[in-house]
Amino acid sequence: MEPLERYRPIVDDFEAFLAACERPLGNAVRVNTIKVPVDRTLEALDEDGVAYEQADWNPRVLRLETDSPGSTWTSFHGFTHGQEEVSAVPPVVLDPQPGERVWDCCAAPGGKATQIAALMDDRGTVVANDSNLGRISALRFNAERLGATSLAVTNADARNYSLSRFDFDVFDRALVDAPCSCEGTIRKNPDALDDWSPDHIASVTGIQKGILRRAIQATREGGTVVYSTCTFAPEENEAVVQHALDEEDCRVVDFALGLDHSPGLTGWDGETFDDSLSRAARIYPHQNDTGGFFVAKLEVTA
Amino acid sequence: MGDDSTTGDDLAQNDGQRFDRLPATDADRTVEGRVSREAVLDYFADRFGIPPETFDDHTFWEKGAGKIWIYAGTAPTPIEIEALGMTCLRTRQEHWKPTTDFAQRFGRHATECVIDLDRDAARRFAAGEDQERDWDGDWGYLIAAHEVAGEREPLGIGLFVHGELRSMVPKGRQREL
Image 1 (tube, one colour):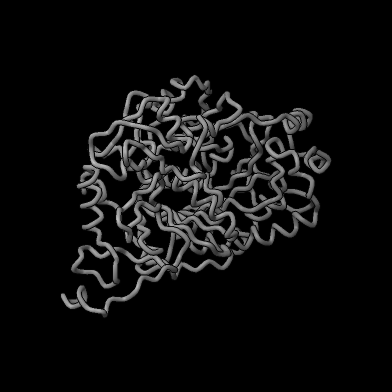
Image 2 (spheres, rainbow over the protein chains, first blue to last red):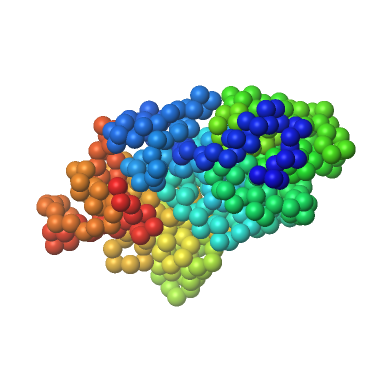
């Protein structure tokens, strides 16, 4: 937990934060509404004697009281998909609409891409891209199990992504759920901080900035880009969004979120960020008993 | 693309690296051995009673020999990418075979060739086991289903032959429930 000490000045009730990071995380699943409505899934779980708690902020997110959420009838039928509660936040903030064209830049293993498809009633085009061919097989497996027919899967580096393969040249929305140092997943993966180093953070921020810039360029004026990570590092969060504000035509916009969270930072380590970055959300593990996440919503401007 | 194209040796070969949209009818075919959208819809309607209009918002594509994909989005044809929607059907073999994932997604619309299993038989089917069954309908590929939360729910594709229902659930989708 040593690397987390650097956040003592910015996290309210830091001791509670550390204590939460040391507790393992329960099993959460998302209801896949491509297959069934929420109430029928709940009925199927009742039938199987699997207890659950429905998240207040999102009725499609359930905390299951079972050690093997994959061995349920709801999982076999693709009614549910194992997905951490906070991981379901970015697609909700993205708010995709049926019929739109949406780009999920870093889509594998597909939890968020299929959630986007479900929010669009599986109507429209979700381009689910990942640079790692090995992870694409997991993405495809999940997409088919969940019955998503609106996904087009590509294998490319998002930083210089070409839309020439499609018959449209701009997206309505894009999700950049960027590769990151994953500090916020420590409750799920106790090894998450083993490779932590300032150098590692510095190396991923370059990639994050490149992907976010390309996502903004590939989204139409007035369209929405959501930037998210599962880390607390301001270098990978606010500083990356600040870079986008400096280099591309976009602005940070407000969004409502039914989970407790803290505002984005307007300064870190001697660097100041635009005041609008306080509109971003920092979700800490002790606030909702979840993993950690950062989410910012951008509107593409002229 | 006239009538000649369906008869002669001038039909192109299937290119396994890319997705090509299925021709509307057999008469529109330009690639040897490729099935048409009409043939696919007829098969789902004739075999399983799934109404053709179920697929009004979907297009069908071939990538890989006889591997048919169902897609709801927009794309040009041909297109070279990793996946387009989901695989739904295997053609270019004696008996066409739908995929388990297609059966789970669209099998609810089926009215024929659906075999209803009780919970224990459903459990064995999901685990990939073969089982003795009585079935007085057509032999061949069936949709296996059971009741979940008050409604019939498809489990996947089974093959019925000689009094035996063989589970076609792929290894990676099998579960001990």
